[in-house]
Image 1 (cartoon, helix red, strand yellow):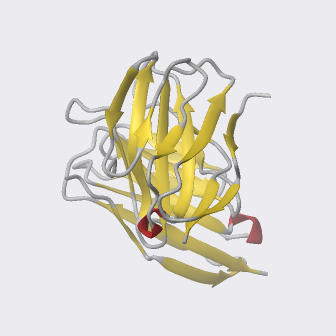
Image 2 (tube, rainbow over the protein chains, first blue to last red; image 1 turned 30 degrees about the vertical axis):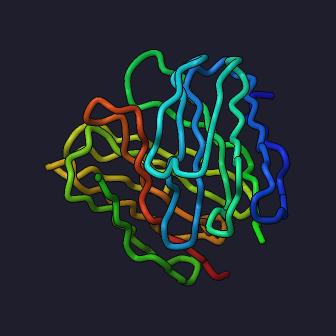
Image 3 (cartoon, one colour; image 1 turned 180 degrees about the horizontal axis):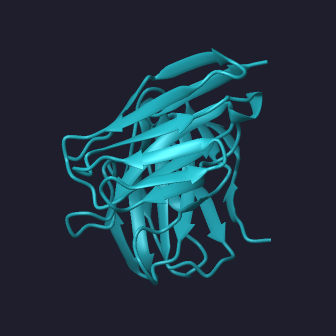
Length: 115
Length: 112
């Protein structure tokens, strides 16, 4: 089954404790992206990657890191989480071939609470 | 910074009623997408519109892209409880970037 998986689905942590949210897709997609979703603000893009070893900032990258060492994986790293990073996080992937725009496939989300 | 504003933010209607959701921007987008998100899940693509003035129909859903490509609308005819969800418009890959811009969302609840 074609899918984007995220782990963990739920996470409660404390300020300053480094954490990683994993994202994996089995569709051989080149493009992967991380979003955060907050009430009244919609989805905001954190980082995206066009392919292995190619990453770039979205609209809200502060406090986050990413890496793309393998095509299928795109982990989101919070080196020192703060309470304002409490949010619902989504990973997404898509093709980059053919005509724009591309359909993004989203993971099920990770609900993060930082106390 | 490009922004997409959706209205209304919340909508609660009775089964069988019609409704329209709007997505507006001060910027021109080369294309717009509409996604629906159900509780506990990620957004799922409904449609993509790419030409100014374009109208697309998906069963009871009608999508329109404004002539100036700054706005879009989603019209649902005879809404059903299964239409309940969060509707998001999205534009992207403009101005030489590979970013996506999502709207603020419209949360729809259809009562049986």
